[in-house]
Image 1 (spheres, rainbow, N blue to C red):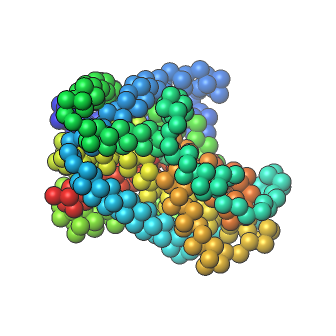
Image 2 (image 1 turned 90 degrees about the vertical axis):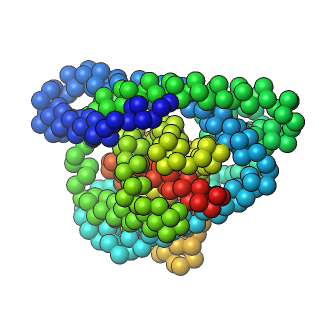
Image 3 (image 1 turned 60 degrees about the vertical axis):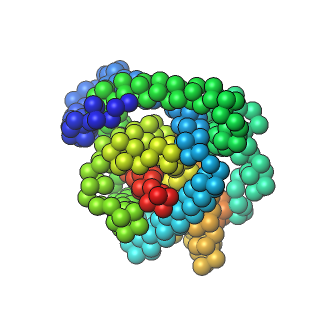
Length: 425
Ligand code: ASP
């Protein structure tokens, strides 16, 4: 995909799509001006959403071959195992460090803003009765032991990994294939390398087509979301949302700091280069659907060499989720503060440390698709002894927060790519 061809003022077009989507959504929504009756809205909204669904469908169609081919190309282009080792060690160190920073910011925000103290006690009472609140015995990670989880990372059945859209397993398979290719002689490796090149080119061409309808797709997705959004659900949750948003904005500040002082680039130029990708992440709520654009942006706008971006971006989209980690930490502590008293949970420093470690692990395992952050959150809650049903309390505002945290997740991947460019030069 030639990014520049589609790039001309794309971010403005996407922004306009978003804006019109919100306006039309508010006009049509039964929770807004209710221009249409509930029944009519139900009939009309799938049509409004259609361009968005087609857009996501096209991307999803190619995302798995794209990840496979890109990682294989990235690894084989880097040429030697020593470079790969260097990149691997650095990227894992970098991903874990930024995730820990992000979670720490989240924890600081939730203690500083203390959103639980703004919650109307009546709201909690009704909710407690409704969910028939019962504390659960603390446990770490649902059912599976840590060795089980590590063993599960290896895709013993590739077809199943593809069928389940298990991106982490696919990334691992592609890495293993790539490393194997590097250690083979050129004449043996060439056919698969050529295949990967063609696969990548085909996938990016399809992504380019999807890009043409991006502004309309964004309109459809945002409009549909606004129609369905229960504005009542937002009331009372303002301070909680503010804690997450404040944390996310601070994290973007950290990225800009990293861009300037670690990657040695101009932060304003960086922000300009990544704006379309951020808007797409925001509108689709999916790092995976945004991944092809993130990769193109890293290579074509930030000038990161393919041998770095084709490895770092797919890997980052799968395991580096700073925004999600921050949100999960804020939500866990907020929910413990809201519901902890009846189950006798009081967070000690050791619990906070446990939340930090669990959240790092959980954000790595969170699939890069809309709304799953909150599902994984349920597992984190069990680790501190809170009933997973507590997530119901924050469900109403999750869709909006998902958009913001996804935008931060992809900004984190792009930041990682420019840092690696500097570290590996
Ligand atoms: N939607 C997020 C992503 O794709 C994941 C999540 O936090 O739900 O990056």
